[in-house]
Length: 125
Image 1 (cartoon, helix red, strand yellow):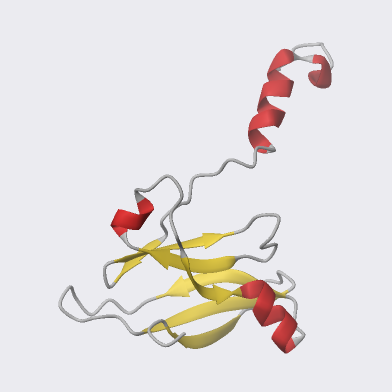
Image 2: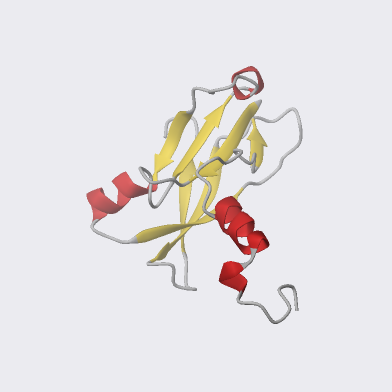
C-alpha cells in the first residue's frame, strides 16, 4: 500500500530507499565499551566476514578514526579453513574497578544457528 497500484520500482520513493540501503556510507556502531576502549564489529567490501576492532573515544570522534583490529574473521577463516561467522561477544562485568581481560566470543560455521564459544584475551589478542 506504500506505492498504491504503481510498480514500486518506478516510484521515486523506491529509488531513494534503494540508495539508502545500498549506500557504502556507514556510521560505526559502538557495541561495547571495555577498559575505556570502544569496540565495533565492522563488515565492508574488504572485510566480508568482518573485523572486531577498537579505538579510544578521542579517536572515534575523528572524521576517520584509526581502529585497532582485535579479531579479523576473514583471517581466522583462512587460517583455520572454516567459514566462521561472527555471532557476538559476552563479557562478565565485574564492576567499574575491575579491568576486563577475557571475553567469550561466539562464532558459527557458515552462519548456522549452532555456535562455537571461545575464550578470547582482548589484551594479548
